[in-house]
Image (cartoon, rainbow, N blue to C red):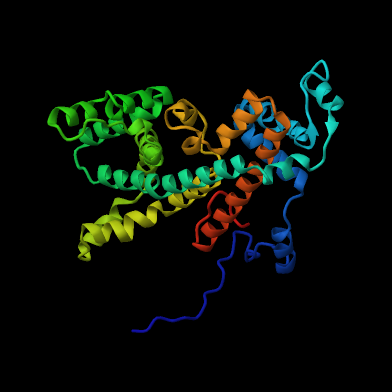
Length: 350
């Protein structure tokens, strides 16, 4: 039997009248009213009422950033002066009374052979750390994540993350006790008759590898925590589906795990490239006398030596301005590469 498709008449109400259809605005008016966004002031007040607690919590951090990061930018004006701290009662008074020299400090920087040596060492150290240090936390995070026992994973994370809290003085002391002239390795080599003199801590040719090893031992644990946090967000059903389809361990790592890590890898890579010229000074200052300035001089130590030790504040500020400009350029270039790879990087294109 086929059912009838004839529409039934509406059921009358108690008064005998059929119900009237609900009134609605014209389609064009509804569409225009829905597409019109609220005014900017209303949106701002709505967001302010919604997020006022978060804004209050960030105010102390914003205040510290303004006081210690943005206000000191005004001090970069001494890069165009012959600044003397004794020209006035305070810093700004001394800056107002100091003579202006224009681009003289920047021209002097281009003609300074010591500056180019410090720049070459900085790029070399940063390149080694980018090639050797950056992949190690990823590999260790994948290795720890593959361990099934939770207690073993927790123990490995604690052991690898502990050196991150050590100061550079303690890190260099540990390496001195291992690889110094009176260290453990040197004593073993002498006892076995393999080498009479062994001291990697004073070898200028080995210094770049020593610095990289110290950075890996100290800071690899921080990267491991970041990548493990990213791995914890991967849906386990993806691994199960891949295993059902016949994917092995390496195939699941390549097609499931690494794509989940790509946004974090791109972000950290952009930050690492942006910090290539800011490699740090404390680690090099402590070991400067052991290997000499030719092997250990980087931009940060060169700025310290010229600005603080020699009192050439304007020249040191000029080097700092150039280093900051090039660092911003490196961040923008690396972020553009991340966008070309389909990742967001530090900021999105929109």
